Image (cartoon, rainbow, N blue to C red; front, side):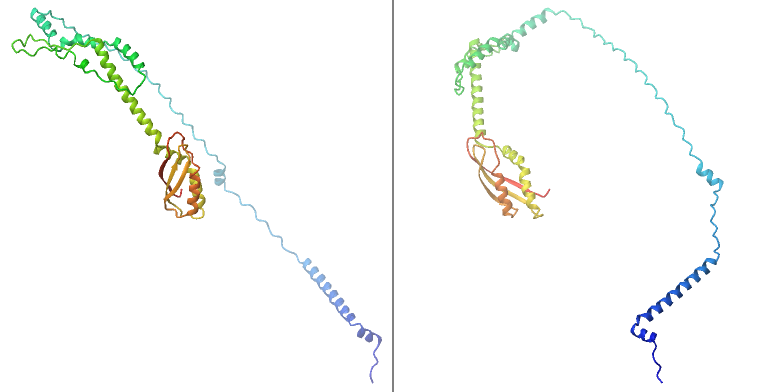
Length: 317
């Protein structure tokens, strides 16, 4: 015979989750009971208390060594500096008085020889030389005459008659028979003749100085010195190097010398500029340098155009 299914069996068949719920509740209750039992067992076990380690005592010798302070070193007092002894005053030197030699009286022969020597040789010209040295009157006359000259280019000619006057008034030759009693003849120049000679010499020197100064001013006014051109390039060197350094960022190995030829007008402006030679091999940099050099300003005190050649060397700094 087949057993008839009851109500619970039919209900579980239509509701399968019910069996799973019952199984979950059984597992949960059993787990809680097991945990409680283990907790009760563990709490009943007595755990021995660990003893803390005691701090070790420091030996007395070490404690004294640590606590003992360093003794301060006694300060060394420097010995007092000895006072400098005053220097003894130097004794004044007594100059020895030189004994004057007593002048012996001249004899009659010595007096005659001295008078004879004064009338012969160079001593005979002392009075005439003294007259030539005293030229106070001549200086005043020369100063007024030089200031009155209007045209400095006229060359004063020397009067040969003034220079040769009195030449024929010699001593008349040397007589060997009367050699000891011979006297020296001399040419005498008057104040007017000396004045004429001096005026002519001063005028010629003045004319020569004026001519030299005119030639020098004409030469310096027509040409520009190398120092002036170098000074202008040195003043603008930083601007040229800023252009060069800007291009060198793109080409670090860029360096070389550039030789330029520029024409400067009398007003000091750069009229024309050309590159004679270049080691840079960079046309863009060369164009920038030419454009910058055209803006240079030179002095405007010259009378003609001038063309110069100037080298510029660019090296990495």
